[in-house]
Amino acid sequence: MAQLNIEGKVIENERIVLGREDIAFLGPNLTLRACTVTVKVTARNLILIQPRLIDCVIEVKQELKNLRWCKAFLKGCRFTGVMSGNDFGRWPFDEEAEKKLGGIEDCDFSGARLDACRFLDCDVDTLKLPSWPCFTFLDPTRRRQELLAAPWPGTSRIVVESLVEAPPETVAATYSAPAVARYSDTTEEALLAVLQTLDGVRL
Picture 1: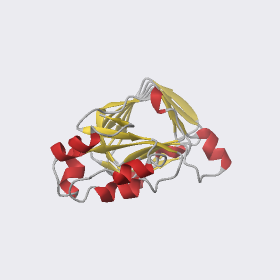
Picture 2 (picture 1 turned 30 degrees about the vertical axis):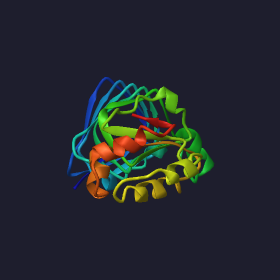
Picture 3 (picture 1 turned 90 degrees about the horizontal axis):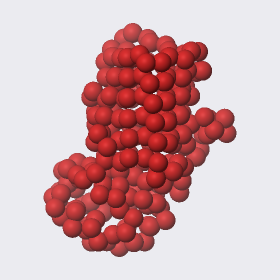
């Protein structure tokens, strides 16, 4: 493993590769502007220390699992690749200083595949989220009763049960229908039939 520290500077219009063998630290006091960031590293080896990424392209080259982006500020970035269990925005349980520095706005996920990814304490209307076969629940904790009452196929109600227990600051959560169908013993078509009956779902 090679340790990669990028901190204390402003970098513009460069390509940054976080390789499979790296342990990558982004920040503190780091601003990346109009850069292309290629992510091959695992979430465990990508440590975000309040970097600011502005107008960047973030290319995820292998599935990125369970990364909490809440310690980064993301504005105007475009994401590609596969991400599961990632959190974006401001994490409600962080210390006050980190809450102010984290966040997300004006980002484009339309070229990415997201599954079980949550957006917290942000304006989801500024975000472009992926369309079907991905789908997004808006304000899931507020819609708890409606979501739990729906006739979910297979074991997909388990997904909804865990979703509605998310922090109330969760303004949206995006899932991949092929992934949910696979681990819930159902089909994309059966999921879609239920989703189309619900308010607050973006397809």
